[in-house]
Length: 227
Length: 227
Image (tube, rainbow over all chains, first blue to last red; front, top):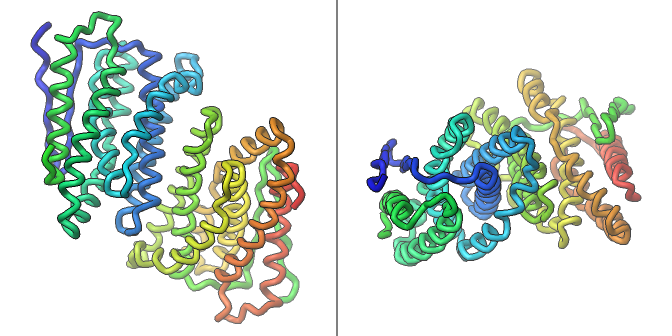
């Protein structure tokens, strides 16, 4: 199957909801679940830290709520790992080092950079994992898709960044540049996640990344930033 | 009423569940709710940060879950603030500076110090706020008591600290010292929270603090540390 399924782009208000399906890639279930669980835990940690650093009490509690959503997803995925009689701590240990390096590369200096980081990188990785979920065995695919499809509540990051750009328009160009660096680092991590042992050749992988980048561009557009 | 109501000490397994009631102190409802909401948000932030710093994936997700409990309490209290047609961001702005100073004083250097900090300071402040809740107007008192009485899930901090002390017994004396400093700083903050405009004299306040310290001692005991 050389022609990839068309992505489903669904705009909801001003927020960015993108659904990409990769029916052609077959992730190894245990590896996938460990990666997905650890990524959601990381998103929780990053959002909680950003919420702590945002001074404005109009935004910081909602960033904390977005963190809690990621933690709920983490919990639901670890429940899937336990259902397979595997140990979540063991499953999450495997992807940890790679994710940690990635987090240090994409941490950002200012709160705005960190907020853009999570908005962009977690957005792209969520798209990837939601897409890969469609290739899991059907039962688990259905449940994991339901978990990951839940609204991530990260639209507050977009609102926060827009308000910051509105207040200080000069931050926009630096953030656009930062966003371009983020997408490069994130695509590298995404490449390491996509399975290659089941015959996922460059030809199969390329359209997937084209869709991920299209969704990323939409997210940057929603901020008024050039991707 | 010079004789304070006896505290209710309820041990549940090895965890420390203490309930102190202060029917004699009458906090101003709006002030109380703003303080309680901001404190729970702070506990969320501190626990999320500690979870991020704990390397062991056996503990860190459970610390994150404890953070999520604090955030749920924060949300439930902000719902009470909105019910009174007040703005949570405004209500929380008032206690923020004092809590921030307190947080920087009690942050700790090592992960163990930070974990002990939240275990001890949030434990003491939760006792205080749960106690004060009994003096709120009856409807709101009942709801806030139900919110704050929910298991805080922080027993994972005790488990983590015990395992660290077990691995490296030499950390215990430093932690005991740190615990003594923490209780001093926390009692200072607690004093600033207890209302004085409604005739809460030293005589009335003293037994309250005696109970808070007794509960604190129990928590330190549960860690095998001298209070």
